[in-house]
Structures are given as structure tokens and as C-alpha cells.
Image (cartoon, rainbow, N blue to C red; front, side, top):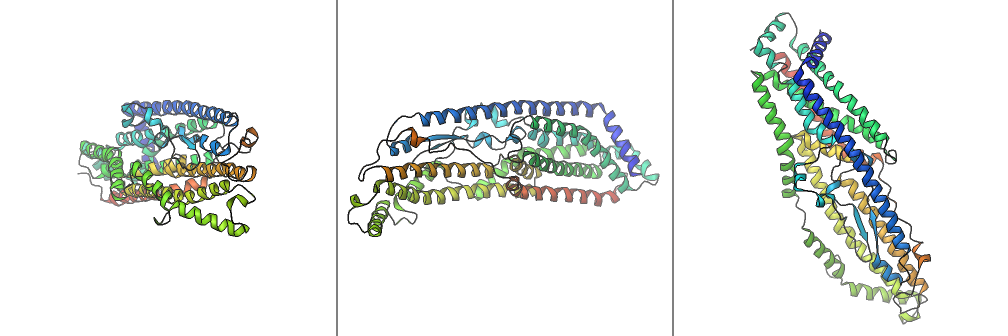
Length: 472
């Protein structure tokens, strides 16, 4: 009985002209979004690779100067764009693409793409992820709102039940048939996405195919939960119009209100400092120590005393190396402790905000899906933090090499001799290694758990409602 009902629902869905038109529009938008995003990702990756090569040439050809000046000359490093950014751009437009590495400072990523966008960006971008998160649920609503309420309204539900069809079999058959109709539309989109992803060079570098598979699972959980909720509403609504109105209100709350309210709630409960306040506090800690009672000058004087004792000397000029280079190394170490604490606290707070919004997905599943989708695509804050930490490690290595050259190859008491290309070439170019798929899965786990709970709860509710299905 269930297969017969499923087959009948599948055929009815495909014969419905409204569904075919709506499906064609949604699928067309998804296809266009994927192609445009693929071109954008290709262009962005090429531009950043070219900029990195040009920056390397600038560094090597900067001419002769002392190594300390070279540390202030600095270098720019560029964040590679994850292949799956073509599917879900996530936070990429809002977290910066370039980090300036220089001595004595840890800088945040700058040059946000959103800064160059028009006011229309506030309405969001059309990406494949946006289409699946917002437009496909609307298609599910159109497909399901009258599945049971419409039959009750027309009087056919009474006839079907009078033939001995069990309510649960009827509901399951409709769910399978409508789910198959939806799957027949989305499977080609998934295959097309796989083809587009395959045309991106380096798609295997960060396990993109495994990530892509997990993303498919996340969206399957989300749409399965939406399908069950829609059928449950249709089962209890007295008329198809009531079911449609109820589902549209739920869609608006989930898609429009929840993201804004979730962000506001996170900022209220876990506020982050303003940029000026953050920079001021960090520079104060650099000068006064993390405890506020260890001025930098006092720490360096104590370091000089310990260095003289260690080498059995009474004057810094007697040391077998340039103490200015060594003190620069110590200054960077002390500053690094401050940077680690302040940036670590800030990044921890931002990740806590993300987790709060994710668990708010227990009320609105879109919040959980967005979190899981961005994490698996490599475009969430966790991945941005990984890049920022890698850039900072490169900065410290780069400054260390320059300060060691000053310490070992210049006369005592001088602030650096003249260095040239031979030293500049000792500093390797920045090569970012993205985190493995396991990193993405750990970041996505809370969102996936919430989606699974929604899916299980929605289907449990539907199966509990099914036996109570009444003709009127």
C-alpha cells in the first residue's frame, strides 16, 4: 500500500504545473549561482596567487638595508580561497583576505570584500547554499501544504480512509512520494555541483570531496526535517489555506527573523570589544606586561642582567654577539605572549558566539545548517582563525630570522648592518596548508547534531500525528 501511495504522490507532483514551474525557477537559480560562484572563485584564486608572487618579488628586490628596517618593511600574505567557497561563501566577504606581517605587531586580516560592495549586499548573495537554505524549503512548502489538508478539504481523505488505508501508511506513502519528487530535482543539482567542483584545481588539497559529501548529508537532514514539519502541519490544519499560511509564517521566522535575532542574542550575551578598545588594551599590555605590573623596559633590563651573568661579562659590548639582536628576539617573545592572550581571548569569544547561534538552531534549524555548511565548506570563523594563526607563525619566523642575523652578523652596539638579497631569500614564501577534513567535521558537529535532532523530532511528531489523522 505504501509504495502505491508513494508512486501516486510522485506522479501527481510532477503533473502539477505550479510545481514544475517553481522547480524550474529554483533549479535554474541554483545552476546560475554555481556557475557564477565557480567563475568568481577561479578569478579570486588567480588574483591572490598573482598578488603573492608579486609580493615575493617585491621582498626579494627591496634592495640593501639593515635587517631591522626590513622587519618594518614587512610582507603581505594572502588567504587562499577554499574550493567549496563556490558553494557557500560563509564569512569570506567579512573577515578579510590579506594580512600585513611586520615586526612588533600582529595585524588582523584586512581588505574585506564586503567593504567594496554596494548596499544591496545586506540582502545577501545568491549562492547555491542560499538557494538550498531558503528557496528549496519554499518549494517544499508549495509541494506539501495541501498534501493532507487539501484532501481533507476536498473530502477525498474520508474516502481513502474508508477503504481501509491506515492513516500512518497514507502519511508515510505521501512523505516518500513527495521526498522522491524533491530528490529527483536535487540529485541533478548535486551531480552538477560535483562536476563544477572537479574543474577547480586543487580540490583534493583540503579533502574537498569528503567535505562535499558531508555537506550533502547536512542538507539532506535539513530538508528531511522541513518535509516532515510541512506534512505534520498539513495533517493538523483544517484547510489547505491555513496550512499554507502557517508554513509561510514558519519559513519567514526561520529564514528572516532567526539569523538576525541569533546574532543579536550572541552579541548581547557574549559581547566583543570594539576594535579601538582591543588595540588599546593590547598595546598597554605590551608596554606594562600581562599582569600590568611588569613594564617592558624593566623586563628587558632584567633580561640584560641575566644575559651578562650567563656569559660572565660586565658590559653588553663585551658579549660575543650583538645584544641588540638578542633583545629584539626577547621583545618579540614578550609581545607574542601578549598577542597570544589577547587574540586568543577574542577568537575564543567569537567562536563561543558561533556555538551559541548554532545551538539556537534548536529553535530555528537554519542557524544550525548555516553553521555546519560554513564549517564543512571551510568558510567559517574556525577556518579563518586557523589561517590567522598560520600567518602569525610565519610572521614570527620571518622576524626571528632577521633578528638572528642582526645578532650574529653585525657589530655589537649597532642596530643592524647592511643586508641584501642573500638574507631575503632565507625567508621562505608563505604557503598556507588548510586544516584536514577532520577539523571541519569537528567544527560542524554541533550543527549536525542539531539538524539530526530536528530531523528525528520532526519525523517522530509526524508519525505520532498520523494515527490521529481525521477526515474533518
